Image 1 (spheres, rainbow, N blue to C red):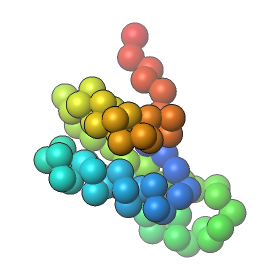
Image 2: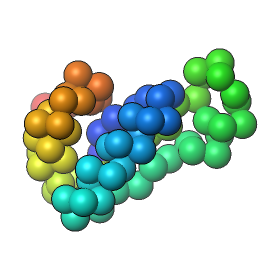
Image 3: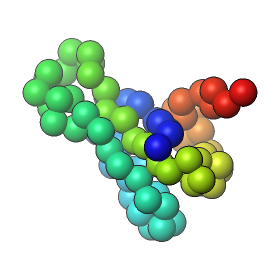
Image 4: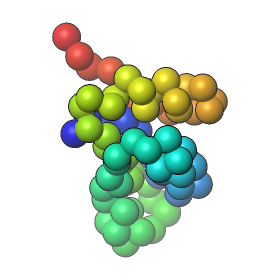
Amino acid sequence: MKELIRSNDPVLISFVSALLKEAGIAFTVLDTNMSVMEGSIGVLPQRVLVDGGSVDRARALLTEAGVGNDLERDNRS
């Protein structure tokens, strides 16, 4: 799995999740419970991960939806 996005914004995470689900791209959201427990300090962001084979498609989808600036940098060599 590759990290697609990391954010403390629950609205952004929800939006990204809805886009990926509608597009049929398998994903998982990590650190949801930890993010809620820590409160509003912003220390523990939630992370959205997708399968390595779906990264390019997911990145294109989110860029087209206007949240491309929130994507984690692509660290592929």
